[in-house]
Length: 458
Image (cartoon, rainbow, N blue to C red):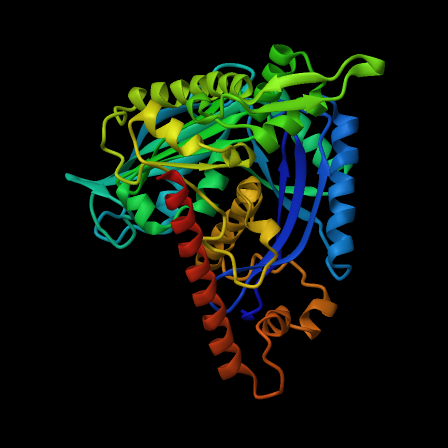
């Protein structure tokens, strides 16, 4: 098998934007971004594709922008995120009695166990999107993360099954196909976002990932290394914008602008005597808008979203201080000022903003480390997870992923080297040093950034 890694493309079909990002892992196991394009999204509401034609156009625009960023790319297959309030999850249990119980447990048996779950009864009109094993049991031994290599008579597992509405899934697939692409896999958006912003310590400590998008807020809860719960809450940044529009009697574009520039999630933190002046419509007098009123409207909607988060945590018995990693906020809506404080106040858990740079190589543009791209970068990681697992099990079946010759001739690492300003042909050692130097300065930069934030809070 060649050491060449495939290029994997994530396509995030969101309510406010559609993003296409192409990435490949480098020799350090970090993601290098090879192409990036985005477009405004019109045909999607609350995370669901309603207008297929508009969605196709937006996907094509995002793709064109991605090709414009790197003409050498060739994109055929994409990993696509799915959200929407039709998403449901349920827990099931499955066991099989083994035929050759003196032998060790093999991957085929695990695959059979997972395959059996796809026959679980679910309501008509729904279909299973994903089956995720939580923990396994072999005979009387419980809580086994991976049973391969064990031996026993009976192997079983608890499963987290994610289902969605057939029509909603069909609309996504149809939009992607008509845009000239193949859906390699549909991935639940909160799981993609979690992959991008979470590290192993978070998984062990227990965290709730809250991805505040345009049309939905996605939730994924991990505890003791296991995915415990997923949910899609049908409110997001668009709802906040609409509340501002209605509450203050302004245009939607003005509401969005005010939210981004002057918005705060805590009205107590907003200055009482600060006002925003908005030009009047068609010769009418300009409007004075109180920053405090703006914050009060935002706080009301964010509080509602966080109440839903707390409700879901209660459902799985994790609302008390059992999640040591607290809440990780990501998605475009997580950039609101004072959101962390409000989240901590409502959920009673520690909170922080999650940036999708856990697995990104150094030297990429800052734009890509914004929380709004967590889902898209997570989709690429999900693709790699599939690739790496398949590679272990079915050697060589993934060779369909063709890497354009033009990209092979000029390894992307060279571009990273340029960023770190190492010239000359005595390559690897200097390159590694420069990459390490870059990472260190990047980390220190992040630490300073958080320090500044902490100071600002005090």
